[in-house]
Image (cartoon, rainbow, N blue to C red; front, top):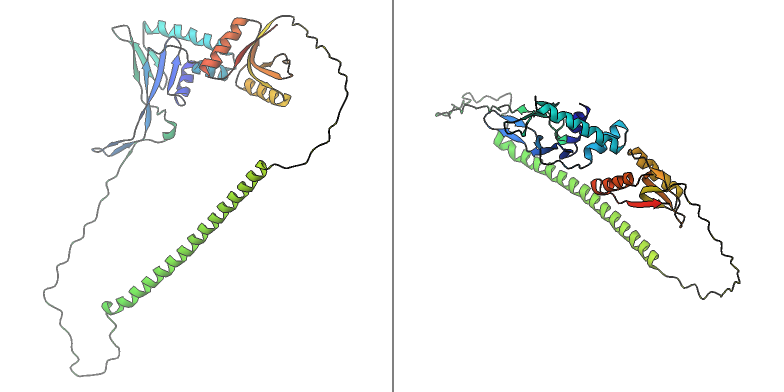
Length: 327
């Protein structure tokens, strides 16, 4: 059951997770779906399928399991092989369930048939997103008023009396003044915006020109040559006595998978700590004749174990390594 959980976690990160000698789980991206009749919007998702023909070990599941359980790569691979044997025996009599992924059973042709559950969305970009229904937007309708057929009567001052108030100006008489005021405000705002963005543009251009000038000066200084004149010759008479470096043979031969050689011991120790954090049994080898500190993914007394680790790192993890025999 723990291996099934590892498979589910890896499907979030990889498009293909292969179980050696069993098959591969694949993910396929499905774009946004909009149901025009129901108004349901579905976010992007990744659906899972199974291919029983992809059985070659790609190292992803075993390496992930080794990191999670703090065991070696070979031990994790043996656990997977034992679990696969149990899965194949169970399929002969009943169905096989992968929690959160799908269900497997044998069809009448004795081939594995996979039915995905489709409950979990393995697309990390759509994490937390679910389906939602679009609500219909109601557009309000207004009833058009019918124009009046007869003009309103105008009341006249028959007695010619002085009125206590003066009629206000109509909307048509006020509109030109308001129109000019609005145009003036808009013009002032446009001038202010133009000045602000123009000043920002000039500032950015000055900064770019300054940076280009500094880079040019730095480049000229680096390329410059200086005439220091002719130096006086100094003759030294030295007598060197060759020292033969004694090599102490090892008690037994070692076979190592080298990750790198470092002149600095600090850099070598940093690389050693990184490999141990990734789950490898890393170690130092003998210092090479040039005085370089060599860091190995693993140091073995068995040549076969060293070659297996070398092939896995080089072809499965696609890392640059080389093989060393210490005698």
